[in-house]
Image (tube, rainbow, N blue to C red; front, top):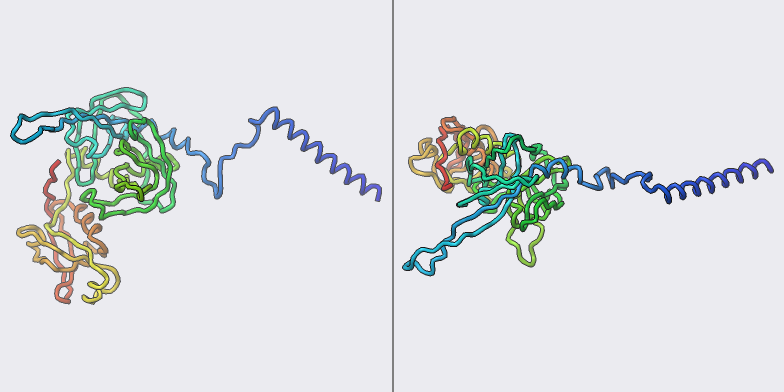
Length: 358
């Protein structure tokens, strides 16, 4: 019994001495404490590494525009210079930067300031108003290009960071999550496939980077929902997978070449599908077919329902627009449709989409 008491006393003394030593170590050398690098299920407590990787590729864009402010049409035309700012992202070490079309549209002068402070007047390589993207080029040697991620792998709830130049506050970073993907019907651009995020996006963030926690570019920040007292934290970015294709086309052609069929798709309601005997949520309605266009030449008619394009089931007009635009002029595109309750198949030879007013 005495030996047991001695053993317990020894253990207690060891614990007290150990705690005392630990207290002294922490008091003298707090830097030896383990860094709390993760929270919850392994998410980083800091995103500084991701910012360090990507921020050097984010640049500021300053523009000047001549704005007509004539008092009346009968008086002499008067102009004033209007300045504005935005952001751009270096996507190629050879000096290519991507930004929003609306950042540089109608600009009389464009200036780019890199993260290291260097200024340049970039060449406007090309624009694509239908996706709100523009490509710039500066000759400043090899630049720190951002790593391109995969926006197709984004999930709702993923953490993202917005980096840009809001209100002229350079290198600003805000954090949020992916609120939705594939957002459309916002009437912001012709081809909409936006990433929705609650990371704060303000004036000047347009054209900046939306990155993931690895510091990879997943989107180009573009717009916020019209803000009022009841609207907060709803921003939109163009997915990097779309940006890749647009940039490649502009580099190659100076513009984006898209397929066109001369038709206007519209979504079907559940009641319309039921009335037509269409099972599931497949199908779009042709609200218009342009006379003399490829669809008209293939005998498609207004009121036809299209249920597949090149074998892909069609669920929305947004999907149909993207598939049609993704074809090349001269491609033979197979469409399966329904007319007067009867299924039919036709082949449309895609033409080049008429250019938008850039």
